[in-house]
Image 1 (cartoon, rainbow, N blue to C red):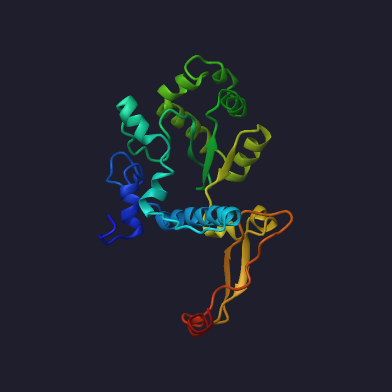
Image 2: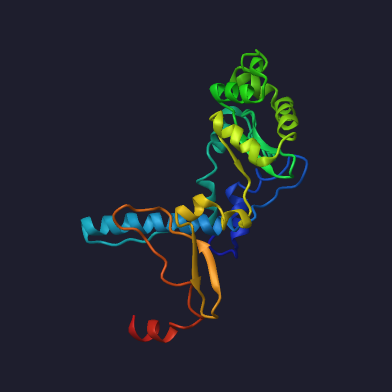
Amino acid sequence: RAAEAGFGSVGEAMGGIRYTTGSPDRPPSRYGVSLGDALTSLFTVIGVLAALNQARLTGRGQEVDIAIYEAVNALMESTMADYELGGVIRERSGGVLPGVAPSNAYPTADGADILIAANADAVWARLAEAMGRPELGSDPRYATHAARAERERELDELVAGWTATMESAELLERMQAAAVPAGRIYTAADMVTDPHYLARDMVLRLPSYQGWEVPMAGVVPKFSATPGSVRAAGPVLGAHTREVLSEL
């Protein structure tokens, strides 16, 4: 629809992700970030790199054409096949993925939410052991992926009742000791102080033209031989207009 006006939000809607985002008892929601714009930028970079590689081989350039709804739809997994082959339209499911359990955010005594992903059979058994309920790991009601899928809500209530009895730090320590994937649901305040973020140079601080020190995400991906860097937080609007128009 090249002749129509559009924004990233419209691309997210047409790409399918708005329909599947949010709680099942509420209208479609949106992500808290401009997902459509970011995805389109990433696919554009991939396309440009591929075109440059082809140009080196053939000596010819080409147009890289990407629409926002296409970039969003590329992440929608098997939704079209689910519909045409299985007659299933994926619906909104809140914080869970239907049929994958237990895998959700669970409360703690100090008010935090901890994401625990124990949906594989062996991992579920380890979680049951950590909960002090090892018999649940082999209980026919929960022992298999299919059985847990049928009792998703029941399992969430069971796990949440246990996690709510302890502080988040203790819960995370127990999950690490039991080799159960888990992590705190981060806010920006967590990100800028997390030792893993800092060790991986994922919190960069550069001065802006106003003199503010601006924290920003580091370079992704990391390269062993040619590591990337960020030289500046960004110029004032229009700072390079004359240079671009007169020299480039």
